[in-house]
Image (cartoon, rainbow, N blue to C red):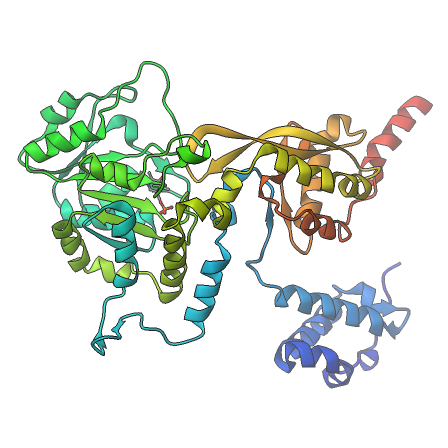
Length: 488
Ligand SMILES: *Cc1c(COP(=O)(O)O)cnc(C)c1O
């Protein structure tokens, strides 16, 4: 039976409805509430809200509920905290590095007050925004000079655009990387106005390949850290010091895009070696670029460290103004760089490093603490088990090195053929939580890697909000078919 249309007179007026909305107006403001009240009434008149009508009565309580849900959903921040249990510590789609408390405090202070961003307090005159960071960067890398731009892609762009515009840059074919989010070395080269000269082959490049390619239009030799893939087998790369030597013999700068770039040796925590900026500079690199929010564990930023005269040219490039970082990121980065001055306590203070070096047993304790609650929350829906798994560093760092970890694996019960869809829905239910929980799906199982969960209660508290579809509901149709088939 079609819903009985309300007569226009039995639809309450906007003013009348607003009169009942004092708490909503107080909370969300009159303008938004009025807009949504009008919207709902419009939808009702357009026949799109049959639930607002019972017989010939207007359903006030349904109206209130619909209005509230519209308000709640618009008031919620679009970008919000999630629990990254994907097992990828530096997940680009989930915002990469989680910053330390020191950085958060510094950002809060910088954002809520005026600062000496470009003001020299000693002289009472204009200062340089770079000064807040360049001292730390030179101290931590041994570089003569350093600057910071928006991200590492911007760093590569401005370095090439300054040192090699309308000229040629020689790069090994094995290093023409694409980083997630459309950063491709060949594209950046052309945007920077340089001509890319590829040398060698995908798997092997020799020093003589570079030497033979140097000509009158060559502006630089470049090395790109192949951060998100590894080539195995019959391979050859030219060592940094050899390339630096060749470049310098021919009067050319040697540029290195380190990608992640680390400021301390990860070996001391038993992690695979990642080249440090200091090492690369010591090998003779003239300019090194690296990211702020990868292994460094800071905010998005692109660091450029190297020889003083080259940095001076880069700083004079008008692009520098377009790519500069704001006071909040400077505050965050300064706070993070400061932590590197005390490597002994770095692990305890820097979340990225703490997670990457977290002992398997400690992760297992967290998994065991969460297990009973997750089992209870998913009872009748999925079987939950403790599993060994492997975390990745992510963001193109150390792609082949996986860290032993412990996770909770949820497998939908009686899923059979539909296991793919069932596990997708289970994952979707976790994404709908007030603090969305993001895992990874692996062979029909939803896995939460607990490496990045510090406090079990953060996850356990979310579980009470979990809304799962009734098992069997989605299988009703096939079951009926099966019954019919048996009956006939
Ligand atoms: C990640 C990466 C980039 C891009 O850095 P962003 O900070 O994300 O802009 C460039 N080059 C290499 C080798 C990288 O690994």
